[in-house]
Image: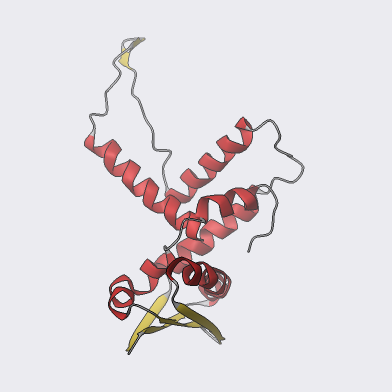
Length: 179
């Protein structure tokens, strides 16, 4: 999950950079039309899959019998649902916050997959105490550490901490365990 969110933020940065540059950077004549240099393949999940696909194709040791891009796609959908469709209620605690994260049936599945899987990464990266409990409609996540930083980052900011997403997505695409 962390890799996807990192990929998502990298995509945002690239999109911003691309938008700030003039679209016709290469005017080579191709049948009277300018040769446009395009770098953004579209939507964030599509971009993450495109990046992984290129890495796999460039690696001569890729075992294509194990590659599972569909699993990566499902994971990216889960990440999107947690980031955009989950409802989050935050309550401050003396050392951090408690987040109740809920959603509809499909979003609940994403929440129950993503949040518990990310908790150990968040704890390892920050040194904070992170505990996740499953509830009927999602999860409750308790985070204790730097209360001011936790409050400022809120749930979705906490879900982005650590740089494991890209490696996780590549492992998943190669047919490894999802979490």
